[in-house]
Length: 108
Image (tube, rainbow, N blue to C red; front, side):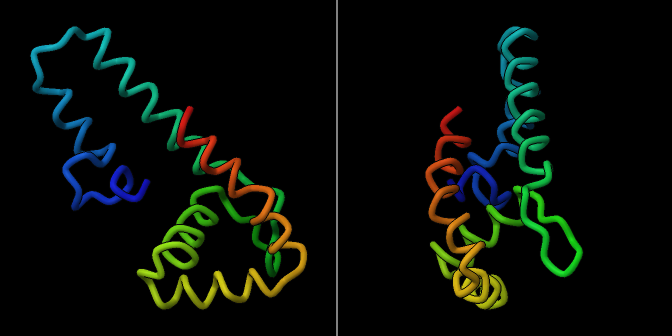
Protein backbone atom coordinates (compact mmCIF):
# COMPACT_ATOMS: atom_id res chain seq x y z
CA UNK A 1 0.00 0.00 0.00
CA UNK A 2 2.78 2.41 0.79
CA UNK A 3 3.95 2.39 -2.84
CA UNK A 4 0.69 4.08 -3.82
CA UNK A 5 1.07 6.92 -1.30
CA UNK A 6 4.80 7.65 -1.38
CA UNK A 7 5.70 10.08 -4.14
CA UNK A 8 9.22 8.70 -4.41
CA UNK A 9 7.62 5.55 -5.87
CA UNK A 10 6.84 5.54 -9.59
CA UNK A 11 3.43 3.95 -8.96
CA UNK A 12 2.23 6.50 -6.40
CA UNK A 13 -1.21 7.86 -7.22
CA UNK A 14 0.26 11.32 -7.78
CA UNK A 15 2.95 10.03 -10.16
CA UNK A 16 0.43 7.87 -12.00
CA UNK A 17 -1.73 10.97 -12.52
CA UNK A 18 1.23 12.58 -14.28
CA UNK A 19 1.65 9.46 -16.43
CA UNK A 20 -2.05 9.38 -17.32
CA UNK A 21 -1.83 13.00 -18.45
CA UNK A 22 0.66 12.08 -21.20
CA UNK A 23 -0.39 8.53 -22.09
CA UNK A 24 -2.16 7.98 -25.40
CA UNK A 25 -5.37 6.87 -23.66
CA UNK A 26 -8.90 8.19 -23.89
CA UNK A 27 -9.98 11.18 -21.86
CA UNK A 28 -12.63 8.91 -20.34
CA UNK A 29 -9.98 6.58 -18.90
CA UNK A 30 -7.90 9.48 -17.59
CA UNK A 31 -11.02 10.99 -16.02
CA UNK A 32 -11.90 7.66 -14.36
CA UNK A 33 -8.42 7.43 -12.85
CA UNK A 34 -8.52 11.03 -11.64
CA UNK A 35 -11.99 10.47 -10.18
CA UNK A 36 -10.81 7.37 -8.31
CA UNK A 37 -7.80 9.28 -7.02
CA UNK A 38 -10.00 12.18 -5.88
CA UNK A 39 -12.38 9.82 -4.09
CA UNK A 40 -9.46 8.07 -2.40
CA UNK A 41 -8.08 11.39 -1.17
CA UNK A 42 -11.54 12.51 -0.01
CA UNK A 43 -11.92 9.25 1.93
CA UNK A 44 -8.52 9.68 3.52
CA UNK A 45 -9.32 13.27 4.46
CA UNK A 46 -12.65 12.32 6.06
CA UNK A 47 -13.13 12.36 9.81
CA UNK A 48 -13.00 9.20 11.89
CA UNK A 49 -15.00 8.66 15.08
CA UNK A 50 -11.74 9.14 17.03
CA UNK A 51 -11.04 12.36 18.88
CA UNK A 52 -7.81 12.88 20.81
CA UNK A 53 -7.21 15.96 22.92
CA UNK A 54 -10.15 17.68 21.26
CA UNK A 55 -8.95 16.95 17.72
CA UNK A 56 -10.87 14.60 15.45
CA UNK A 57 -8.49 12.35 13.55
CA UNK A 58 -8.82 11.94 9.81
CA UNK A 59 -8.56 8.60 8.06
CA UNK A 60 -5.29 9.84 6.53
CA UNK A 61 -3.72 10.46 9.95
CA UNK A 62 -4.87 7.04 11.17
CA UNK A 63 -3.66 5.33 7.98
CA UNK A 64 -0.26 7.06 8.07
CA UNK A 65 0.19 6.25 11.76
CA UNK A 66 -0.76 2.60 11.30
CA UNK A 67 1.35 2.22 8.16
CA UNK A 68 4.50 4.08 9.19
CA UNK A 69 4.24 3.59 12.94
CA UNK A 70 2.64 0.19 13.33
CA UNK A 71 3.42 -1.79 10.24
CA UNK A 72 6.54 -0.42 8.60
CA UNK A 73 8.05 1.26 11.71
CA UNK A 74 9.56 3.71 9.23
CA UNK A 75 8.97 6.79 11.33
CA UNK A 76 10.03 6.96 14.98
CA UNK A 77 7.48 9.66 15.82
CA UNK A 78 4.62 7.72 14.26
CA UNK A 79 5.85 4.54 15.97
CA UNK A 80 5.62 6.31 19.35
CA UNK A 81 2.14 7.61 18.47
CA UNK A 82 1.04 4.17 17.30
CA UNK A 83 2.35 2.57 20.51
CA UNK A 84 0.49 5.10 22.65
CA UNK A 85 -2.70 4.56 20.65
CA UNK A 86 -2.36 0.79 21.00
CA UNK A 87 -2.08 1.10 24.79
CA UNK A 88 -5.40 2.97 24.79
CA UNK A 89 -8.21 0.34 25.03
CA UNK A 90 -10.60 2.29 22.79
CA UNK A 91 -8.02 3.00 20.10
CA UNK A 92 -6.67 -0.53 20.28
CA UNK A 93 -10.18 -1.88 19.69
CA UNK A 94 -10.65 0.59 16.82
CA UNK A 95 -7.38 -0.57 15.27
CA UNK A 96 -8.32 -4.22 15.51
CA UNK A 97 -11.73 -3.66 13.93
CA UNK A 98 -10.56 -1.07 11.41
CA UNK A 99 -7.41 -2.73 10.12
CA UNK A 100 -9.49 -4.97 7.88
CA UNK A 101 -11.60 -1.94 6.92
CA UNK A 102 -8.47 -0.02 5.94
CA UNK A 103 -7.41 -2.91 3.74
CA UNK A 104 -10.90 -3.06 2.26
CA UNK A 105 -10.77 0.70 1.62
CA UNK A 106 -7.62 0.30 -0.49
CA UNK A 107 -9.08 -2.64 -2.42
CA UNK A 108 -12.09 -0.58 -3.56
